[in-house]
Length: 452
Image 1 (tube, rainbow, N blue to C red):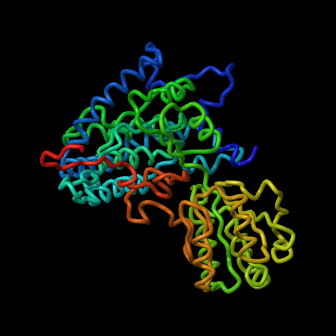
Image 2: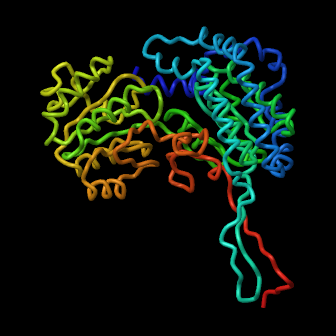
Image 3: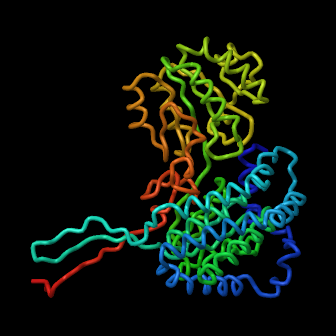
């Protein structure tokens, strides 16, 4: 089984399981099983829908105070969060290539501090709700413009990383949206603990009950039922592998913004600064390989391959990176494994890297178009013209020049903790921050104007 298959199975562990398998819920939620899933969800979603109007009217100061209180709550509950996270880790099988998934699941004191810092940063950002634009006076004296408003109730279906629970809740809160969270079953204890801390701290600060809701049911039926609730939910945001994306888009009666896999490329151009190129390549692959913005394929111009690849290969191999290269790559890195066609387009989520030597930038861009997932694409070059052409012609949520793909992140872009990185070609592409979680409505100021 490939790393991508493992990722997809993790993302939809309860969705893709065979009918014969019987779901055994965690002890924490067994008592809820006396209520059937549709009834459970309806009760949860009625509470979420009821919270939407009062939440949308809250002043920015109240939301900011709540976010700070939620951040303090996470830090104060560090020991309890680690205990609940340990339950998930104990139940998780990290063998057979699932080490990357275990890393995504694991909480540490540092990661909890990072979650709290993300909430504080969001509190410092400008509130998008109520911002107006395009106000103009028509010939009849009527004034027309647009104002940003919350989307309403947002359902977020995601995989093993518990930090998504805090990030999503905070961004939805600041943008005036109710969030309904459904994390992976492998993180159920962690997600329940984080949601409990956030909800209690938020309500004490004036956030309405139901504004942050977690679906605690882990069975397949819960996701399928959730995707039908267009009466209560305004938008679905799935974050995970291809199987999850396929299931959500096929079954949802609710609008969907996809946050798909990250098959990220770095192309080293003929006149690149090779010292910079090596630093960027190593950072993009090694710094945290289990994330969606880590580099999965390195493309190297044939003109500098002989000089660049032997040194880079030595550095990567010393860092325990498994290199899978084309025939030319293996001439310069003899310890590299032979790459197969399946290795290109693969999201490894581990210390595995596909490498290919290309004739020129045109071949590199064609490779990216064929195998990329429209997530993050990078060129390293000193040629201004080729840099501009790469930026204009490569199709991705983020296209970067002379920077690591790991920097495609809401926090790094100044958006605060992101809801995810959208690979959908609609209004929101790349890291989705506060403004992307709002929509606009027209407002009209008249003085008795009539249609003639």
